[in-house]
Amino acid sequence: MLFERTRAIGVEYVQHGRVVRARARREVIVAGGAINSPQLLMHSGVGNADTLGKLGIAPVADVPGVGESLQDHVETYVQHACTQPITLYSTQNPLAMAKIGVEWLLFRTGLGATNHFEAGGFVRSRAGVRHPDLQYHFLPLAIRYDGRRR
Image (cartoon, rainbow, N blue to C red; front, top):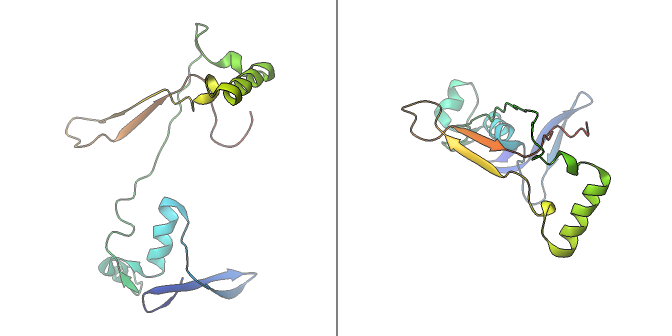
């Protein structure tokens, strides 16, 4: 990022092997996600001045807390085939999906009125942990988060 004193005024990036500078007309918005936003800020000199100095980064703005307390959201999926007809698997055909959609559009009720994260819980992974550090989700059907259909 480019700065005038402690104010971000633009960005600098490499395109086709050339360094390009783009100046903002009004404001610079950092939207790189929970990990990349603080990383970009810190590489640009915004963060704890002592930490940045130890990394060889010239501090632009001493803002303790930037880049601290980051946590990853590691997920593990465990799926089981149900031996009883109590899942939502039967709703995964076009006719059933159309019925669900019509019911929601007309009455705002039924299976279309929920995101199906029906149960969950926060638990401690071991004794002595001050706050819950694990989160469980229980869903009545198998889903994918990777954007693929199958």
